[in-house]
Image 1 (cartoon, rainbow, N blue to C red):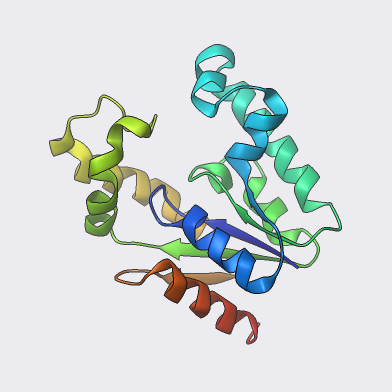
Image 2: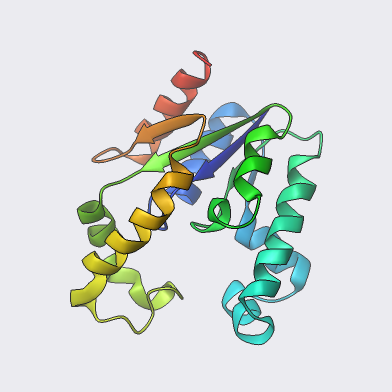
Length: 174
């Protein structure tokens, strides 16, 4: 089985994914980390040195490689991964794959992200006062992609352990 976690940055994909993978006894893969290892440079450096088009190309290739493998895993994607090219269709139709959307409200995303804006390339340099409007616009654009997931899990006010448990319980129903 492959579980692919999608959602906006700060929604808890990596933290929840690690816990979920441990609970299920399968490996955890962070797509950005996987790409960084394969390319020999960080994601911000890839964007800076090779550009967004190059990054999205290698992101798609990595996603295809992982999706067509016979391995089971929990995969944490970047916030934009399902929103580019045919990534979402591929994720939804990889064999034995369930796409899970970790859904958070804009106010909760603001709370989670305002303290780490400098570490998030998309937010670096943005005035903190503009964060709610920026996130609202982005989430409005991306939500139609996220909402196509096989499973939508509202995560407001829940710990990563509780979210993992909820996902695991819902897997039994699918």
